[in-house]
Image (cartoon, rainbow, N blue to C red):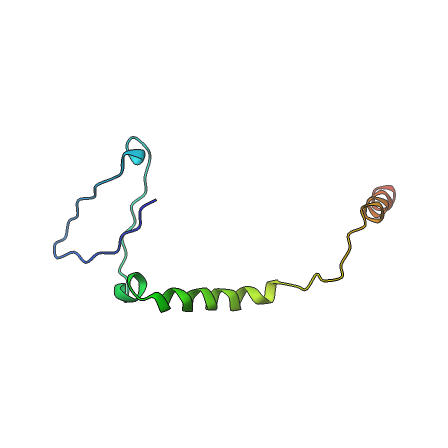
Length: 85
């Protein structure tokens, strides 16, 4: 995978592909980036994105401390479900 952020001064670009992509189907997507410097050079930008992502995922996590899986109980429950369906 190649990800490059650049600023073009013309309406055309030439891309040089690595050898492992030659002969393969590839997808090229072009869109404008608001602040290319922040996404490529600023290390705090990455830290902010990671922190924001962790905050969003926090609602999907749970504390499993003290939880013990009982395989026999799970199998008994499945047997119960299958016999009552």
